[in-house]
Amino acid sequence: MSDLRDLYQQVILDHYRAPRNFGALEPVSACAEGYNPLCGDQIKIYLRTDGDRVDGVSFEGVGCAISTASASLMTEAVRGLERPQAEALIASFLALMTGDGEAGVDLGKLEVLSGVKDYPVRIKCATLAWHALRAALEGGDSEAVTTE
Ligand code: ZN
Image (cartoon, rainbow, N blue to C red):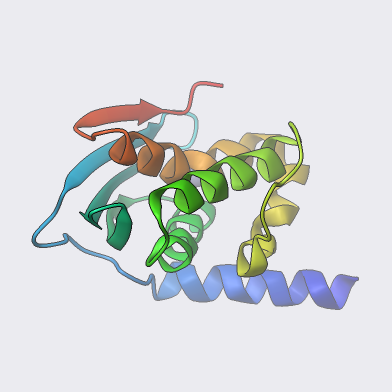
């Protein structure tokens, strides 16, 4: 089990050091910002949709290893999904992190973040990008603040 945890740590550090899909997206359909006052994480999510399909997601911002890795993993996980699938993935990831309800869909690589739920103060770091993506899917130009 500790080997698995080491592997998870490596994936998180890899995505922190070399975040995927980092930078503004052009053209863009919607943006949303997130701020986690507990840790100081700030993130901006760029979303491009093609009809109901998520054509691309990128992010910018400054944050800790957990918030950056979570955003990076998220951009890879949601690209190419249809909107309902993306919403289901967001709901499942948030359920995993908060322990509130069942993860409805297979989270795949996102499972590497499952260890974060043992550290309650870091959960908001992990969920920040996801709340912002949800805001962007709902139309964007709003700010998601992880207050609970
Ligand atoms: Zn953080």
